[in-house]
Image (cartoon, rainbow, N blue to C red):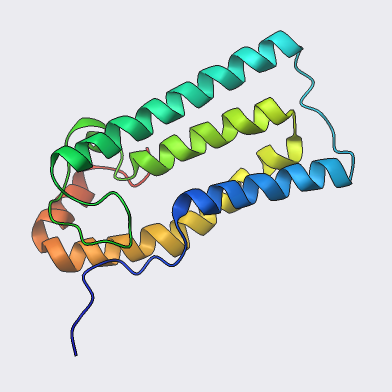
Amino acid sequence: MTQRDHPGVAVPPPLIYFGFLAMGWGLHVWLNGPDLGLPLEVRRGLAIGLIIVGLLLDGMAAGLFRRRNTAVEPWKPSTTLVTDGPFRFSRNPIYVGFAITYVGLAVAMDSWFALGLLFPCLLAVDRFVIAREERYLSAKFGADYQAYCDRVRRWL
């Protein structure tokens, strides 16, 4: 029997974020939910700014993975422990970027429901994705990963 060389994440993390966002939007439409109350120009500017920042953070972090020849996808093997760039400030900058993009999209939707589902979304990502990734990385990289965890926070 061979041991798998990946964290065993069952659902791609972007789908988790988009699933919660879609549920929030659906609730907003179905229940005629409250708007955020921001003027259209402010809402547009805020939404665009957040989406750009989130996507830039994701791109920077994913680019580092690719330059180090290790997989971005959590269902593929990790070959290198990446600890520089945005990984100096967060062990999960890609998920932070997804969260920033999520907020930008919820603002664009003008939906308190979508915004309110961010916390349960982050909880799901933390428990069902990050926990598995951290067990895998700890087993694979041992003391180096533990030292990294001691230096850098999980989220921010």
